[in-house]
Length: 253
Ligand code: AMP
Ligand code: MG
Image (cartoon, rainbow, N blue to C red; front, side):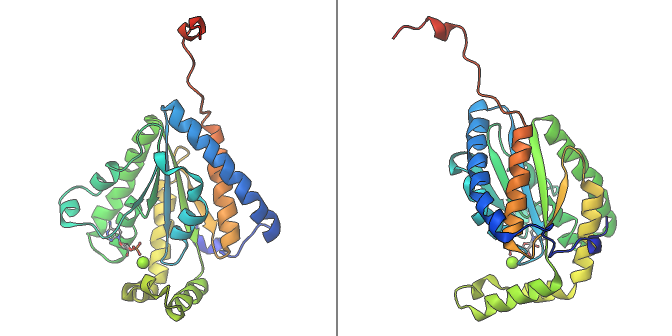
């Protein structure tokens, strides 16, 4: 898999109006399925969002994940690790926030920062980062064997689109706070990030924890395709309402 073969502008021939009309219906299915997941209390769903700065991770949470009732949905945003987090293995802070049965967790950035950001910025030796691919596969496999359904989305934007979004943020006083000096430094290493992402996706995409490369230059396409994938995956989870025990039949009211 080579990310340069994926067009961030791709919309698979779909029309904006058609897709925008479908998103509310998909969100309402997501909401019903989430309720069933909560009542069933047997399985969990973990959604991982990764992508460059301005790629739309917060946008997906606002436009798609908002379908979920906060009663059983948690969003975790992973920042630069604290000294306590750094004193542990890289999966320590991640494992603590994995969803419990019946719940959905959404990771805004994740353990993949430890094989992308850490690798590009050389915050740990290359050999340590490379070992992490296997550690991540084993970790995700273990979660999957424990009824955690994992979906990982890489929001694929072009360098040109990032420039547009950064300029838009800079020119809007209400959005300027979102821009960090860091973002410009990282932008200079664009190709290194893309190649680290491709390595992570190639090494850690498994049937039980797939990576999806989402063309994300067009927000309306990104929103539709992610809500479609989440809905389908939740249907495939075959979530059931708990069975009534026979005794309930004998209750007279
Ligand atoms: P933001 O998502 O814009 O709030 O920024 C969070 C920052 O934390 C980003 O620059 C990430 O690359 C950084 N970050 C997240 N996790 C890690 C990690 N494990 N190691 C180093 N930097 C990280
Ligand atoms: Mg940022």
